[in-house]
Image (tube, rainbow, N blue to C red):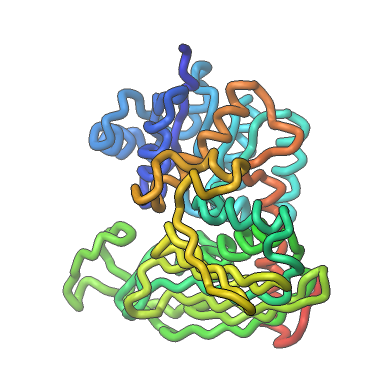
Length: 381
């Protein structure tokens, strides 16, 4: 079997996560790595056990590389995705797809024109119980969606000395918490419920108005400690915390809270979806159990077990019940669907995986949330 050769661009926190997931697929070979300089690319490639390494321009010249994963800081996503598509490569891009709607719209159109496979890494859809909730809703088990309560809480920016490129708008964009993790939450909610968000009311808060930027490089989540003289004070203009009221196209309501300064919450996305028949409640830090609430009977807990799932949801499970699957498995399951399309040579007519169009959708919602916070009022989408 000839494997699809992949080039991965960027080696921060998420690039190696892509590499690890790709290596778990039988039809894929991570053939090359790309970094900002050849020297850095060589260093990272050796550490990750990858034979070939390039700068971005040279990577695109490699005819045998059929697919490119864009895992760089946000401000590079548009230009690198565009260049990869123009070079005839299939593209998997980290979110956000671009820094603004104009760039995202251009990428959606270019991807459609080329027919190449295009995907945005909204991998949290691929927790098996997220797929099961979607199928249960489609089969009528949930009933009409009455309300949604969602949250995505982290603590990796809890201290004023916590710092990362995501805090800098020229690299990350004008929104941080909402764009970084709120986009995952909004994507999963619309994916599971089938609803569209039609209006938002947002209120942001920046807890640390000034942060201490290390004068030495510190990688995401590395936990390295520096001395006071190793920091520079930097004003912060993006949100640490956000509350957003939501209105949906079925006339009902929801609310989300997003925070990167919640002590003890390492990476917790919680959903509570109340329907006319049942309520679903799920927590990504305990991803193998779904609470199902009933008015007139016992509440239930559904374990992640293929024998208990609908057939339509079993494809994103690799292990029997009781053998837990978690965050690394979500990317593997997503890439499994993406690379089935790449083997077929074109974007499917009805992709099961999140596409550039989904990336545009989440960027649209994010921009409307930003506008709402600026206006301190409701904004329609």
